[in-house]
Amino acid sequence: MRRALVSCVPLLALAGALLVLEPDAGAQPPANDRATLLSYVPADAALFLYADVPAVWNSEPVKQFRATDKATFAKIEGAVKSFGSTVPDLKHFAVYVPQLKGPGDDTTFGVALAFAKPYDKKKLEAGFKEMAGKRTEVKLLTPSDTVAVVLMGLKGDYAKPQPAAGPLSDAIKSASTGSHALVGGLTFANLPDELQRDDLPAQLRAFRPILTAESLTATLDAGKELALSVRVRTKREAQAADAEKALALFAKMIGDEAARELPDFEKAAQTEADLKPVVTVFKAGLKALAGAKFDLKGTEAAARVVLPLDGLPLAAAYTAAVKRAETAAAVAQSSNNLKQIGLAMHNYHDTHNAMPPAAVCDKKGKPQLSWRVLILPYIEQDALYKKFKLDEPWDSENNKKLLDQMPKVYAIPGQKAGASETHYRVFAGNGAAFEWVKGVRLIDYTDGTSNTLMVVTAANAVPWTKPDELEFDPDADPTKQIGLVVNGRWQFVMGDGSVRSLNKFPPKDTMKALVTRAGGEVIDFDF
Image (cartoon, rainbow, N blue to C red; front, top):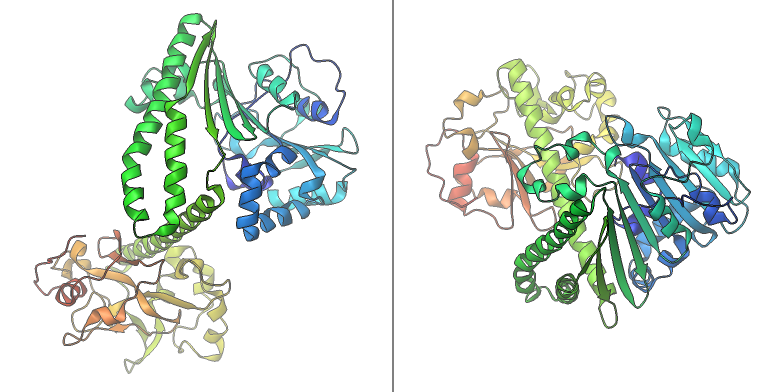
């Protein structure tokens, strides 16, 4: 789902990627907040997720995570507060997407909330409107002073309680019992049509009995153990039997993949002590998968996986996992920045039949502005580009005012908002990929564009508009000018636009060969 859906409920992060549920076909008029909330959920929704907020928030795993990662959970509490409430006051939460058939479907959805005490209607509505922006219509329904239903782009019949019968009725009933921390559900007929076709990709064909079923319901219970139960409702008993086999195959595939990755984690844990708890939890998860139970009753196939929590170092494993995820995200973000810069360079070349010069120079050849200014129109920053006076230096009265408008693509992960310095720089002069005054054509990269450095993460940052690049000296060691600036990795983009990431520098001579565009050297380094 897109950002609009994810950002609408911070607790979705706690729910993980769980699935969906729906109302009871013979339900009586709502008698409590949970029932009132669930009565607005369409029993044929493409996707539905319900959370018993206190059960999730006060579960043993989440309590440990909250104690370990106070900053993240403070953000979650702050996000809930921006909607006029607090986490302790939020009792039940549900989100549903009526269908996911085409473009825009994932931005039209409903959110239902139940509170422990009367909520502030104006703050709640204002919070959702701010999240949605101007493109999505927001409508607040107030079934009671403790229950709210927010329609994001939904109209008409969704403004009233929905018919109770439908593919997700069992799931909604599961949510209404109050026995589960999380309940989720899917109605496959309202998911993309491609999932029901006969010509599924090879990796999905074995799961066709599930993808063509009526619905899937998942529940998660959190006590002394985590218990995940999945039920697939089909139209025929024969399909249910095939769905049971598909569930077993899916569990086996996950287990096999995890077992293949375990040795790498164990090896890494020998030098990174914080990964040892991850290995312990990893092994417990593998054991739980191996002990999964599968069942078949009429037209319904079921699976259940139980993970005992006693003695598991959840908090330590969570901390290590978050750190590893943040590191991976930072590396990915910097890689994406470099990819966009590389693409902009090539688009500039397509327009001007040459790469940009390392700097905009005056008539006497004195550098005025960086190449980073020249490619602004090619990173969707044309308006900013037009504010510059190209015949003035970077620190002139006019141009200096634009320093604090540095595009995000020039900031490495971890830089503070509003930063005006960048580590993304180029080697220039003496046969490097860039020359100071005149742009170089790609055809002149006779060493090959895949063997020539275009943009690197340098050891030192410079003001992004300043024409301060890495002057290439054939007699010096260029490795002194580059740096492991993104979570211990050196990242760069080659002349062909490909992005590379290394955890160690190339040897000095190899580095020189990579810097030159036409040196005729043989690159002796494994990328």
